[in-house]
Image 1 (cartoon, chains in turn blue, green):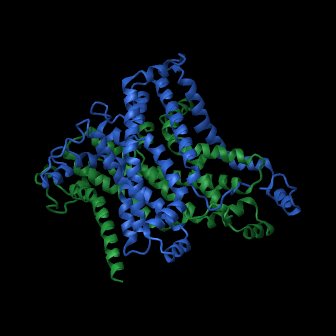
Image 2 (tube, each protein chain N blue to C red):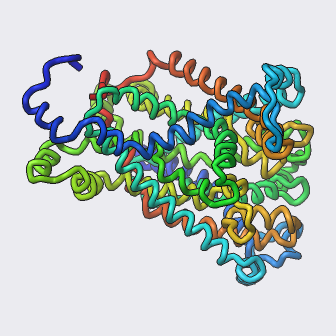
Image 3 (cartoon, one colour):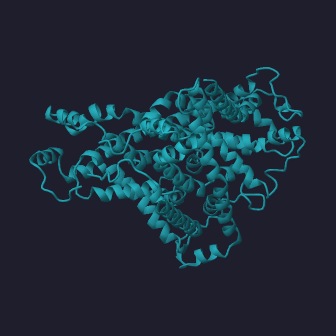
Length: 310
Length: 277
């Protein structure tokens, strides 16, 4: 951008025809209302509530940092943090590698590729309730599909959901069923990899791995970064499987952060504590996203760098 | 040539193996939905069905009043789709084409909202709805759709900016106002993104458990996923499993169809380079 250059006559005319500021605000007003009502107000309101004790029926009572202090000395809260981070560490790398690899295998002309893609995407469209129920039976100690298959090769499977050493792993395995969402994004990303570079590299004698690391991955780096961020943000908010399948148990081994937040809000009716938890999560996510972007900045390649907004 | 064949079969083999693994749970779901409730937990497991008996599906409609809940969900999907299309089309148009000196601030706010984790705002939003007196009505489940979605606004803006300038100029010279320009030229040209928005909205509203679970107090207004979760918890035993699986399959069919139809548009909409303006 050239900064404050004099607008040309043509530009000035267009600006006049396009109308001035009031019309702009009228047109974006739905979003402004939404932003204030659904983001700004809840966020600031919850910051206030997080410093109070509030049981909905009575007025909030200011308690300062008490909610935060209580949380950080609480066994379950700390455990929910550990469980959530552990779950992210287990699922995100596997999920990313597996869905990228599958997308690369699926890319290009393959017979029945439309059907195959749909198969991979299918788990993402099953209602979370049906999926949760399905998997709780798949992991069943006695009749479950997994343990039946394991018994075929003479291994006695663990009590997946009833044993605190295995429950989180079980939910992590289940999450791999949903890699289809990532595959769709990676498939789209693979279309943007410049083919002429591949041809040139191939002619120059570069092998498949070499091309993967010097062409495919670098040109997909913005998408990889985007996926990493989405996965982290999504992973830290994992809720459904813990809520529907294990209800946080056994022994809080699947008490995800979001699940504990939900329980504080809607079961124990501790509004102040729930709001404090929301804010802590918000800060964790912001800090992590910032770190990821900072660290990855030199590694991400944008084809049109400096594409400024007008 | 030979090596290429081997490579192809190896690649295809891996894809098929993965695909089969993904399908096994589905397969189990389907055969369970046809099983006699008494025989669900036979050991060794019966990998096929005795007969294709649709009684579990029928039970879903007769015993659990499935139609009512399907209709409730369809209704909610429709109004959400209308809201998402109209609000985002308009807001993105303003952000893309209208002049405003502090547009950068708007873009930053959009990005921040986009990154705002749902879990963080969900509960505070609940408090806002309670204060507004919307708790107990269906409004929290559809009004937000009419208030724009930062992600779609962003996606649409990027796509709008790829529309060739001469086309827009020609329309303006021909006397097109903002509204006509938007509905007759810009929206049709951004069709792939709108298809994605419609499909995504359908899928997310159709399968959303959480919002309806919190906000719907009247048993008659419950949605399909809420019904499934109640079937599980209130009747929760092996006897209802086949009916729940039948319901699960029924709930997956529309979304699968939607995905199959929208697949091409989906890839088209995500493949555009941010720089092409």
